Image (cartoon, rainbow, N blue to C red; front, side, top):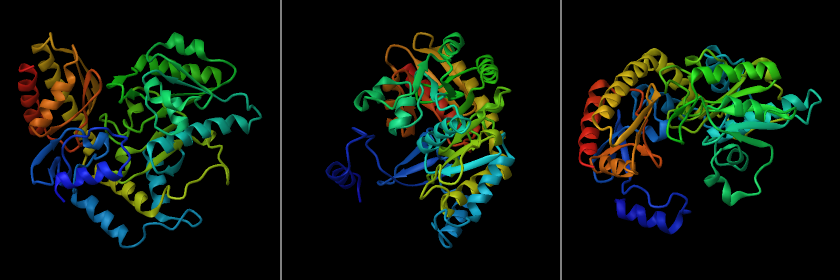
Length: 397
């Protein structure tokens, strides 16, 4: 199909939840390059919103998926599943977690983490400890519960009354967080680096204070690493940057390399689920689990996380130098590894992103911030080409 045929079909049959999309449909990809239905090439610096860590058509990843697809896609968790057990083992061996539950998405993983924190206290005979503190401008998903957890009213308004039990405090304001703690507080849920709000790191001092507070008050600390996990920040998990270990953390996005998957990862002391307490029809199926195993195996074998740290530092250095050249247009550069944001002044960011798209370069943007999330295999040469384009676009604003 050509683009017009696809658009007409979409506008006739698909629920309009995405509004006016970018005027393109992609047919295939290779490396960090996508090709549209007309054969035009696009350089991807957004990775499907931090999903395609290995880029497109990575040979070893494609081979692993083909092999698993030829064997089993689904059996259900009524039976033992080798790739499911193997992926859980791989995550535990590389993290602070002792146990893993596999889901289908980041929102499902966050729901699972919230349920786990609640049932942890319920089984101690403390059902009153059910409130979850989250941060303003956070994003934890689009289910009813994760919308309530998300600290952005624009996502919540149509769905009120919201799922009760969530309290929101400003990011980085430890005093406000501490003041929000009561004898009903079960958990604090946060992203070590907020993504959807425009790449805002919580910071080492803040996270260490939060960890100490949780220790003091017996509160469960949950990190949403749906976007930050699996090498995005130059560490396998973002918590490794801060000298802080969560009690529970969640993964999704890059874990499947494009195949839908999520994970709830917890230390043994907080693994309160027993048979019947939680479950999933598709979660941890052989295909998605094999994809997760392949992603972890490939990024370890090929040194992808270390590469992301090196190229991410190079990209941030170049962005900071660019920002100095345009103090009237660029307010700040934020982020770690290959999770970076450039905040533009005066509502310029949409024009920047539109101009990049016109040059066949893919990024994302919030109201003020250009979001840069390339596949982790991006090279310094790719970065140089991107910076040259961004420089030219910014100069012509």
